[in-house]
Length: 380
Ligand code: CAA
Image (cartoon, rainbow, N blue to C red; front, side, top):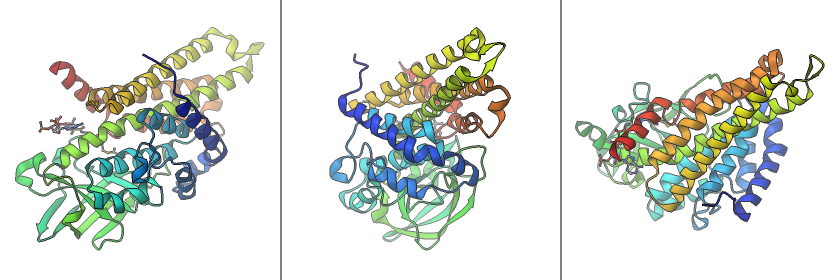
């Protein structure tokens, strides 16, 4: 067992940290306040290869492994959680399934320009009545000759309002339930496809999280990703990789809050000394550092397993469950250490606290992660 990052991974970490400090951190507060989707920042990230980190170079990606992917998402999220999840969706929820399940023709059109970051992709599974219970999705895809005609509404689609293409999950044979689900690629501008309302949220406000509405939207059969009826597997296997991305996002948010609290504790004077001299504060810092280390290690283990090609559903669920709940605890303590200032928008930790909360919900709630883990535990 070797916990040392490779030279290549260390170099990547260093360059992404420099990028995030120089380009991402200065915008984080404004993005939170305005909810403006950071398209220019996305293009700068693309220039560094961060929009297709683990996609093969031959497909337009940067060709790194998934440990490198966790490093990138953590470093970016340490400065801005919205930008972190935008990159996570691009990498794990859009590029990964197209790379894995796409035909050569689909990859030319729907992968390479996205891995290079010239275009933005998103993933549309959730519906107003089907969140955790994803297999209950109601959006229909009815085959008419060489096309599928899509009708239905997707909800809570991260990057939905900004994306050029979407992997959308429809039911092509409702009588078969989850075995009737099929994945289709739909481009923005396709007649019958429009973006609905954008969600106003507690945190990660700059993600263009939107409804997507399909009304008699016709897409060619050539846009089907994988086989008819295999869409649920496409969705769940994709979410395994996505959950590693969200665990990295949670770790990054918590790391940012921890560093802010550590710094504050060494500057703030009370009762004749800096508050870092008091055990009450030291114990909080110690717990935060311990939990951060554990979350990062669990996540790198899951990413390592993904790179071996073995099934990593349980590892990803464990990493996401722990990292997301850890992020809520750590950001909570970061506010506590800041006292009243922690509750103020003058300091970043209240944003960290709001941003952390979603990591326990999207890409499978903590309860869903526990179900997945319990399923594997009981099987073993
Ligand atoms: N690889 C290959 N096959 C897989 C797989 C994988 N990683 N995961 C599952 N499968 C297969 C299973 O083997 C099974 O196949 P068979 O029927 O042939 O045996 C099939 O897929 C169904 O799997 P399960 O029986 O395990 O699925 P389930 O119905 O029991 O799953 C659930 C239930 C765990 C609740 C699942 O529906 C789930 O994860 N729900 C949560 C949905 C979710 O995470 N939504 C997030 C939306 S996206 C989002 O949030 C994006 C964003 O904004 C950032």
